[in-house]
Image 1: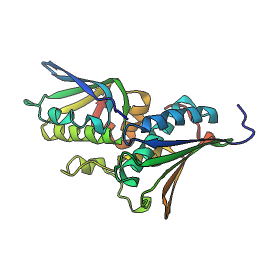
Image 2: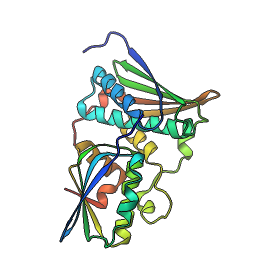
Image 3: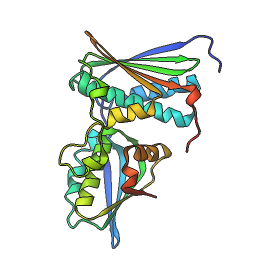
Image 4: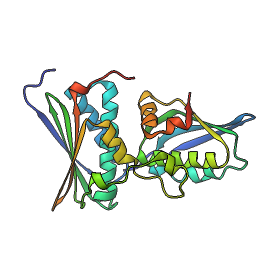
Length: 149
Length: 103
């Protein structure tokens, strides 16, 4: 389907962990409209789910009643997903990268894999921090479409 | 929103233990895993059957890393079967595929 103009849909999630599955379903629908392959749709769903979980946990300090806002923008080049929360945000560059080898010998909790997956499953990700919250923007490009390995 | 709990069926065989996982591996499954970490005796090999798992998130990956950590400290091996192509890729990305034989 050749898009003449961008299509946009919005979603508000309340209810915390578990409700990210609504966002996953919406992300899959938007990704299909964008023309992404079934293989790539699973990347979209996982990355969007992890962005929502991040927002539930960090952005809204685990308050199940707090709201996470999503915008799905389908355009000629692919899909853009915007995830917004009311939290203080974070700096990806100073976030420690998880190291499995280290986690296997450490007594500390195994954390950090959500952002790790977001970075690897998207073509680009941006974090914008403002005085009303944090915005994470995920990009999935059509030109990066590849077959499953 | 309610999250679907994980159910685990255990089948002990002379060569090891088969854990059939049914449901979702998320933070909601955290209550299931402590029981698995306390297995006694610890089997020489554990085969994790993911054939009936349709969702694993980062909290679930952390639970699996914990199980792998325990298996390694107790001298056991972990194997996996039934993973979808997507989750096979995730296992490779995270590095789990270096430690868990994927069948």
